[in-house]
Image (tube, rainbow, N blue to C red; front, side, top):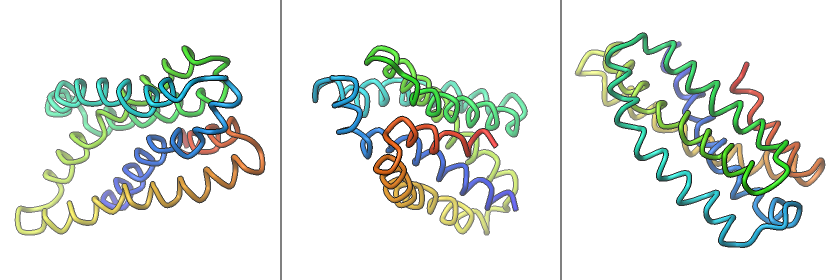
Length: 168
């Protein structure tokens, strides 16, 4: 059960990460941002915060209740994705994407720690292998669902639709 739930969380992690790339052209047109600004949203700004905060959040996962930490991280990145749908300009969207990166930085270290506690050494590689299907599933669902919602209802609805399930 826990492994299945962690796969869904990891799927959400990637779904919320890639959605800006999927909705990029619509975001550019609506907010009148440049290709460089879009690149900042999907690349550098996200990667810096995600990369820098992964280690401290991993250390925190070793010290506090992992379920609560992972729940807090999931809630943060989901809320920031949802709130991205309400961004009125580039700066607001940039801050929301940084919030997504901060939340997502705590996912993998915390989940790996939980899986290591739950599975004996002889079954860990299987558990990590199953866990690793989350990103491809997130990319597939994000491409299909995010693209469809954006086409039918606009990029803002796409962001809200992608962020909302993580809050549930």
